[in-house]
Length: 117
Image 1 (spheres, one colour):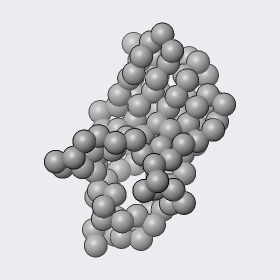
Image 2 (image 1 turned 90 degrees about the vertical axis):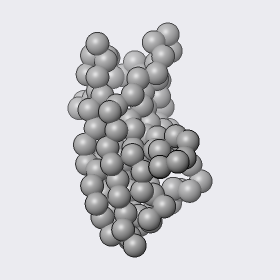
Image 3 (image 1 turned 30 degrees about the vertical axis):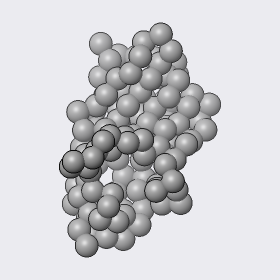
Image 4 (image 1 turned 120 degrees about the horizontal axis):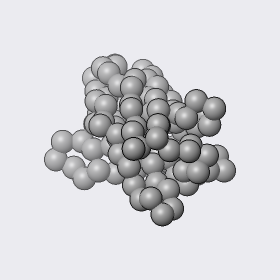
C-alpha cells in the first residue's frame, strides 16, 4: 500500500522560506517515474508546482522558477520542495504526488502553506 506523508507547511511572512517534505512508503522509490508537488488555492484548480523524474531532472511552473527547488533523496524515500522568496499568491494546500508507469497516480493528504503580506 503506497503512502505519502507530507510535512513542513505553515505560516510565513512574504519573502520568507519553507521546506516541504514528502516521505513515500510501500513502493520502491527508485521505480517511481515522477514525483512532484501540486497546489490548490481556494476557488482555483489544482496546479503543478514542480516535479522531478527518476533521473533527477526537475520541471517547474513558470510562477515558481528561480524561487522553488525540488529534490529527491532516494536513500530516504523522500522528495523535498524548498520554497524561497514566498509570496502571498503562493498560499495554498500543497499536495505531494507520485506517478509510476503501470501503477498510476498517488496523492498525499496535503499540507497548508500560508504566506502573509
